[in-house]
Length: 198
Image (cartoon, rainbow, N blue to C red; front, side, top):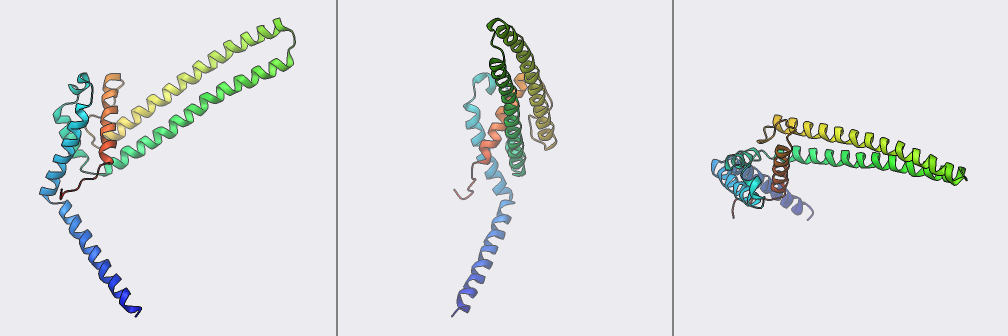
């Protein structure tokens, strides 16, 4: 009696394997790829229409078509997701770094409040500390901006090497904004499921 279910499982497994193989073969047919590009283009056009008009004119139909063709290779989704995760980790670290500077200042102020009893002397010391803290905070913010700029540069390079259209090294804020929207488009596309039989 126990042998019967095993035989069914084998048939079931070989049937699933056959279906997976047939499905993979179907994914490589020109008809499948064409339908998928149409699906991706429809999604991209809809996302594009949500942008402010000034940005719509900067992201051409040709760029959307190139993007749709690019994400046929779904490994692009993995690259973009990995870059976004790395960016979030970096941002979290930078927020903690800035918070540590603030925290150190508060601890130092509390120490002086306990040590110094003369109000005039305390005001003078707190004033000097405030100047020192402001300078340290500006240095920290500058370092944070440098790290974020480098992160943007690294992402641009990686996406350009991966062949993602619209990505190249630039420090132009308008171009970076467009690249951010393209990244958003890619992330949103990665969440969609293409069903060829619908």
